[in-house]
Image (cartoon, rainbow, N blue to C red; front, side):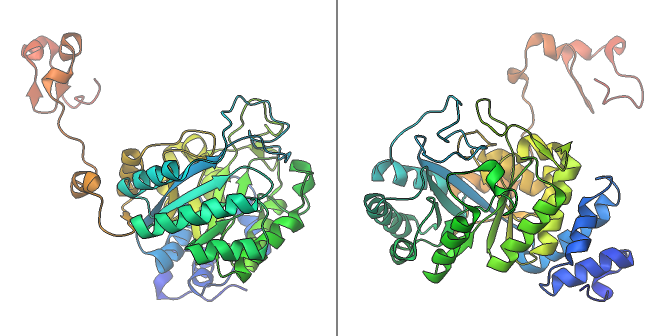
Length: 399
């Protein structure tokens, strides 16, 4: 049911004003509306949708963006057959497999996460689910991360029962990540070694243990709009506090390489629209533009921080992502502010105080051949001092 427009949504059409008011009340827009928003030309009325989603996002998170850093603490040799994953038993992707990292290595990564301004330190273990020995190890590591760095923590470790989840909670873990990935109907197409129901059981176990839920999707595996909408509402029903929206990165050697949604390739406009609808279905959840944002959102990444309030830096499970400085500039370019878990890291103070401005280019950083062609507004190099190489009036950006 849509809520009636108010003064807060002045300037929006009746349709988008009603969508916004529904989100401001922390209610989900109707399913038929979500399906309609995802259909048709992805560019049609895109910016009114972005504005509506942005107003809802600001209701719950203001202009703050949470930066997450992910550490793949155990990689490869997984007995599951998830078709999208390079760690799958069926994948021929050339990944580097390794056993569970030492406590020292996990803490070193936590230190880097703290220094990079991460709001949350996320750890992931490949495999069906953690053994008792792996739980022992992670309990020790999580307790040390919390006591030494005070970071928010999240763990992804496969299928898990309540007893194991409770041990992690008692050690200080804040959230458990276990993605639904797609709809229940489509799930057998991407994985046969475990079921969608088992994933839901793990999330219920985490909730019963008092852990926050982080659960999201992978868009671009050949799902329909209906599949995606069903997943959006399933995550709402589970009350997932954090929803990472991943866009498929096709890795050579994996079984799932479609890289398309509802029969069409992923484009920046499609991805932005999907993030907006996720926000309107799950208004108060942390919506993260996760894996694939650089490749699929491209020049619309800053605009995507209207519906999304969270992102990863420095990489994903198996692929490299943009670095800290690039992510901070993206946040600032969007008119947002990074949300830190504590004080601003010393290494980021200058960048943030300058609002991401670049330092002036110095002559010694340019080659002689480039200097001969360079003309900056109001400043000419020696080689361009004569009128012959001055730019034409009104055309001083053409070079």
